[in-house]
Figure 1 (tube, helix red, strand yellow):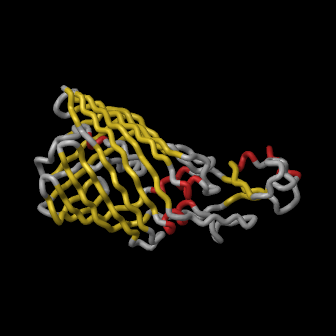
Figure 2: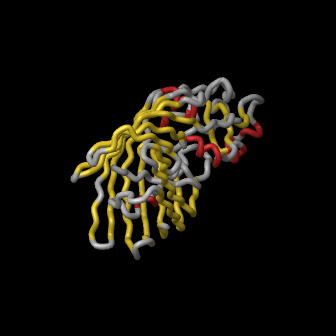
Figure 3: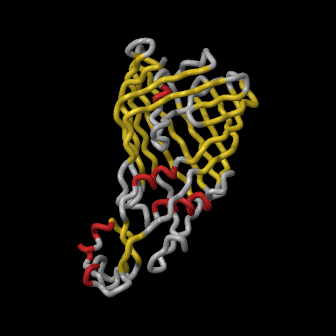
Length: 292
């Protein structure tokens, strides 16, 4: 059983599913390559951060007897049956990409500044809002620029289980950071269903992902390296829910028009971070996809 994973190499966080333009086609050769050109965007939940754009997608898969490379995931197949498969995986965590689109952040105490009357908590805002909050005339030490140290991509090792039934497909991944970036664990369970109608192909999906406290704290927490005004936030384990839809129209045997949209409801431990100002993220891509 070959299950095609959604792919985007130039913008790894935003998975557009370009490689699923023909969502039920089974791999009949040892390699596969395609390129998509269009426009896509991944919303960025961090305060004052730009959304992640994408114009080009790549879909690259190479399969041997056991080893395979599939869009950034290196794997080894332990079991490969028509209805069930087991793979060992080496992949990476894409959460780091948010940090490439940061704008400058400001920190200040509410007390005496009038930004939130009656509140003494430390607030993170876009840096350009600091003068508007009266910081230029506020007491010394009540405001400043938040300098977050750069977070790293994490290398993960784990296992993937794949079920394929006539009424849908189920994918379960359990991944552990082995690079020492955060030493956390994450697991993803996704159910999807594919069907065709003439030249049209559709694939709705729903997934649930769990991230350990170490992972959440590393990417969304604020600790002694970051703090100003004693601002500290320790991340906890959390769960996200994602729904998505892939629609493609086959123009000919090689060229398709592909549209994908996904919505992720963020877990409370991420939403409560002082660095986050959204309770969800959304991603979309629409464009032409050519398979060589």
